[in-house]
Image 1 (spheres, rainbow, N blue to C red):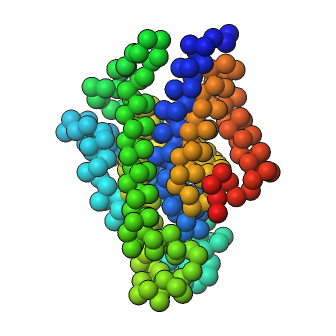
Image 2: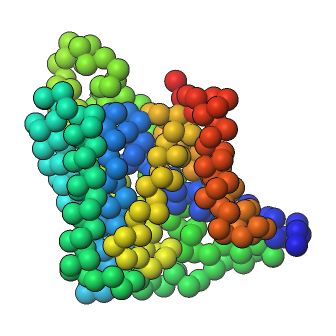
Image 3: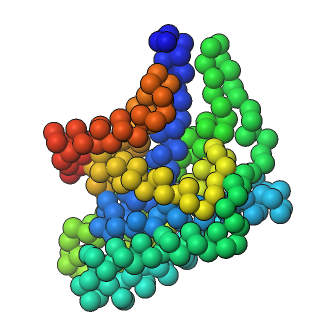
Length: 290
């Protein structure tokens, strides 16, 4: 039954959920939206980030978000290594379309199988003081397990946007998919720039994974739930637009929250993809696409 209080809480829950979706999608926005690399394995790296946060939290008692920050350099190096293999095996041979997609599908399933072999299929969760706490302002409820990831996600977006717009490497990343000749004339190697950008996209999975395991328990195959959603948000926001990504993530979060609240959670994915189809029909470039 509809009530103003319920609607306000659904709106706030949607915004918090959208903040999490933005963190999950930001790596795809860089790799797919800017570099034209269809990294279908990105959700698997997010789950890997969840398990790294789980290990450091369970063994050493480190806060999951601090654990994710500690793991950032390792994920960056992993991303750089994966891009180097992709570049040598596929880009240099002009086979990045179909063969490159198969490569990332392989990474997705290999990562998932390795996690199953090591951790099994049981759900894992983390311990933190704020996981079960909420901030109550009148009838408004703000669960900290959603609020903290949302706020950190927004800070991450602001930092990345400033990096892409204010630094030479950031501007080179934005230009690499548009005009590689001009980039070479500026004494920048397109391969090196793409390697840095892809490494950054994988590094963001560390934080997104920590957010995920704070919000819900995880098991190795849970990343499959986000494959369609992250690409939908990326396209809806406009390829290559980080502000568009966060706006699209918020819109889908709100749509799913209202649908789950008033009609049931089973309808939420249908509404989200319905919004995507309408956007593609009436504005194919996305909300803030160029």
